[in-house]
Amino acid sequence: MLYADLNIAESKAWLVHKMLGAGELSAFYGPPGCGKGVIIEDLALHIAAGHEWHGRPVTRGAVVYVALERKKLVERRAIAFRRRHELHDLPFAIVGGVYDFRLPSTADQIADICKQVETLTGEIVVLVIIDTVSRALAGGDENSPKDMGALVTTVAKFQEKTEAAVLLVHHIPHDSERMRGHGALLGAVDTTVAVANAGSVRTARVVKANDSEEGEGVAFTVAGVQIAADGTTAAVAIPADMTAAEPTKSKRGGNPRERRALSALAETVLAQGEPTPPSFGLAAPTNCVPLDSWRQELCRRDIIESGDKNPRATFKRLKEGMAAKGMIGILDDRVWAA
Image (cartoon, rainbow, N blue to C red):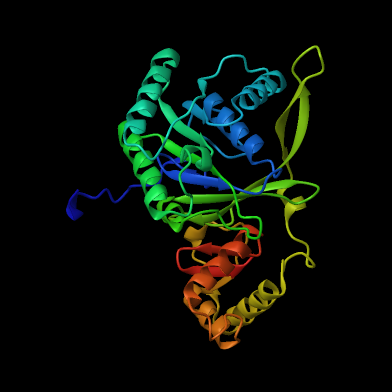
């Protein structure tokens, strides 16, 4: 499209308002037991039903859940959702089997499945879930740029064929809060959502967003629903108050570096802060500063050490971790204390 032909009234299309963009690539990640499988399936079923999700409007459409592991568990959770919400017919399909997403032919296979689902349901497929990245690599190396790049390319190819959003389910290393594997995946996704178990409630919070506000999120708890006479139960997600998940003063700094970084941000805001633009859509006015001003202050205070071989990468990890914990808000090139 030529510059002169751009639509000046163009607005972003959302699959889930302010969390997932329509037709985009996202990744939900977290440690085992955090509840990511439950909240992802809950999200998918709300989209299939066209029902608001945690008060957020959704774009209704068919959903294809590619369960490369634990397909029966995905089925039981869908049955539990049906019982709890009394929704007996939704355009939601669960696909099992082995698919190697390093192979270009897999794009055609998934696109064909989507067409079949559209024919059977009469609904356009708006979301494809791939659970998990590890299984999608079919024995490939998560840390290999070749293997991860091939997966990203395959996903992009079937997105071109279907125009559906794709949600990847991924894990984190045992010693970190970042997504596991090569950075090619992080670079390719439009949105990342970190799922965490905060104790009394669990959260799913936007950590990376290419053109929307980071820090958006939902809170939930997990409950069991009996789905069979023999007492078999399956988990469903129950919406919770997000304020219950907000870090208390003692929790706002998850580690000493984050506490020092938050203090540095507060002082930078006092010295240089300017009101956030109305377009940020914040519920209450606050002051923000350029991300680069904060980064320079962190370097000046040696919070990002002068001997660091890659200070920008260190800053990126720091700000993403703090955003995931609700300590800061980020939009475009501005940052503020949450």
